[in-house]
Image 1 (cartoon, rainbow, N blue to C red):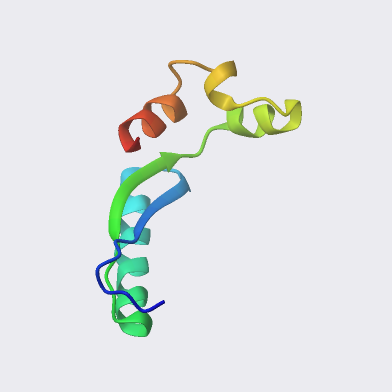
Image 2 (cartoon, rainbow, N blue to C red):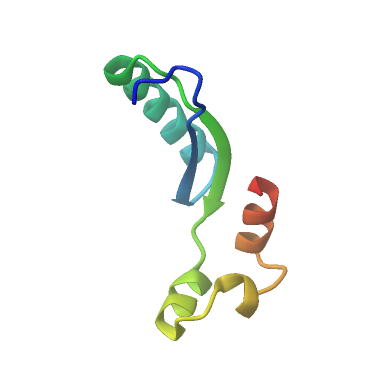
Length: 79
């Protein structure tokens, strides 16, 4: 569907620092606008966290294993 009233949002995952996240968001918006004629809304970032990889291996949600982590903070800010 080509509905211009729909809102598309994005989250940039596994960033190392804010500078990297802002650079990626800027580039993604430029690409989206160029090829889709649409500029999505940025919801924010999720920083790289080794604990996420560990939770995947354990097949347990990161928010249950590592409460109060940077990832937990990022996800709650986006939600």
